[in-house]
Image (cartoon, rainbow, N blue to C red; front, side):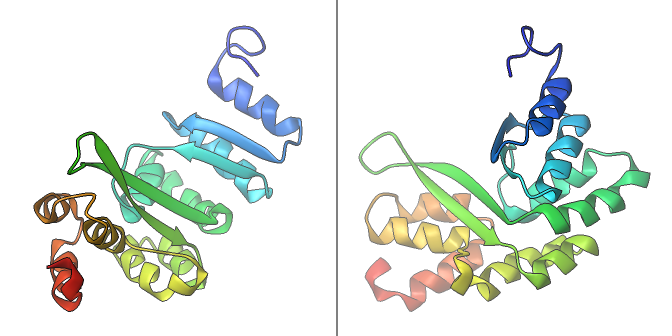
Length: 180
């Protein structure tokens, strides 16, 4: 689907793409509520939807999507997100010790608890869900930062500045003598 050739705008192109029953839909950056609504609806119908959004952690990502809608629609969107999301991955870029940048990430594989927190708009608990779902593949930004410090890709100070929960990084560093 090409905007301008096959469709006049992004929402129209996205709706047309969903009708073609693809296995995967790559949305790119979700910039408006209409595109977000269509992407969430496609995910609810078991399409694999990949998209980007400028956020720094899992809770902010979910909040950004729901907050893009009118207040009377936000609860409905959170219900739909709780059904349609399989995972939320966030990434930040940090200065590398050797020049350039290095990515640090956070991944939440959604389980029952995370879905309930999204439904109830208790997004502050999503960080705890990462720890609960580690066996499913979830990992925190702090875990990622610790790994990058241990591999000597980034400086400890940069990790602490970029961490969403710097106290957690300090604890991980203290409990992991290899990081000191």
